[in-house]
Image (tube, rainbow, N blue to C red; front, side, top):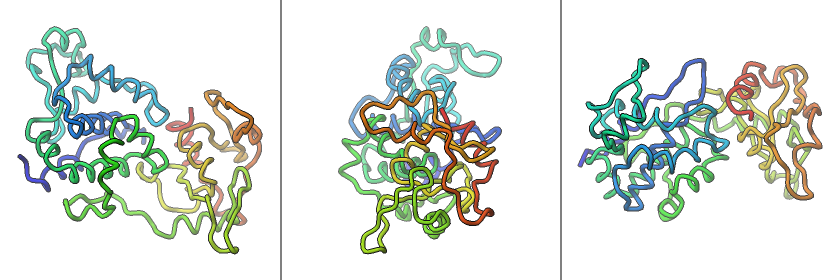
Length: 303
């Protein structure tokens, strides 16, 4: 088995597409699916068609990205730090872009998955695997989406038995960017301690604010800064809807723009009553949402 700290370093250094600040969730998501297979005692390697059957629906989830294909992470992960392998890869016919032809993968019965040593190191160290899961979630996704991703990748049954340490020190993992502990308080205060969309504002004894959160416009995991003009004070419901791309804000007047993909069922509608309405802006104009961050949200998150 591979040394635990060396293994963590391999996962820290996976390469994700970063051109034009685009999100690239497919490699982390495929790794999470593979960790779930490992912890649940399923086979180490799967064919491309088996990977597609499990993974394609996940890429279509709101936290995925339009245009992402199973083929890319399934093949390209083998170039990342001895984490992944594809059997019979030397026999595969490649396209001009360096990706395999799917029919060639099938013809040569290629299978992909963790290398033998990675699989068995994680299989024998579920706490280590859990910390790697947590690390990947924090590095690539906002926390509002973590539970959904755990459910969809098949990790909830295993992860619920292991608590996240939140420090990573034990295994040598290191966050690329630490969070500013004052960010949430500064953002909610700038917005008058209420939701910028629906005015939700509840506290106990006038002190403990309930259900109000600071949302990053450009995700922290994608180099969004912990600055007030990259934050929105939102109730927990609108925070999650914002991170899922159910709505965004206009760069012209900061009005709510609801996605055509958002379908409201039931009598309570948290979206359309606010469509085209200007949010409750901060008292100080210097804290208004930065338009370049709004542009990123519209391009990378809004559906």
